[in-house]
Amino acid sequence: MLVAKTIAVVGLSDDPTKASHFVSAYMQRAGKKILPVNPAVTSVLGETSYASLSELPEKPDVVNVFRLPRAIPAIVDEMITLGLKALWVQQGIRNEEAARKAEAAGIHVVMDRCIMVEHRMRTR
Image (cartoon, rainbow, N blue to C red; front, side, top):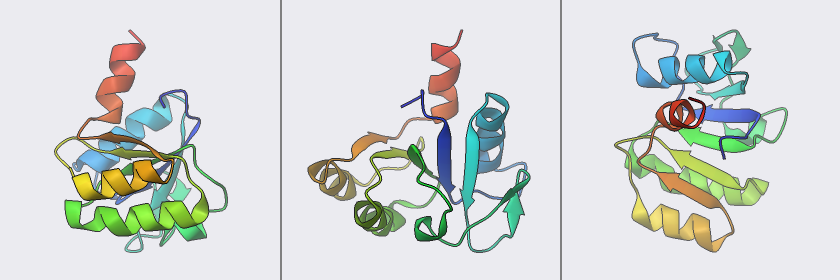
């Protein structure tokens, strides 16, 4: 999944001290297009923020999630509806039931790992 060019980031904060922000900023500097998904902000990292995955102007290669475990099932349901194929749930966040549902629908799931850490390890 690290070959993905476009990453939708669900829960991307405009606060530079938050993990969602600095991880996404790193991925953006690494050449990835970031699509913020956060109804509470209008833009982040110079990109328009969208209220939901359904509102994105294009299909992302990966959906990277920075939300509490209880939010993951609804995200998976939206991904299934939209035909999105890759879910990355950030380090410290797990929802096994949602992961099983996603995998049963053909979605590749990575859970409880940091996309920035993985990218750094693979690009050394």
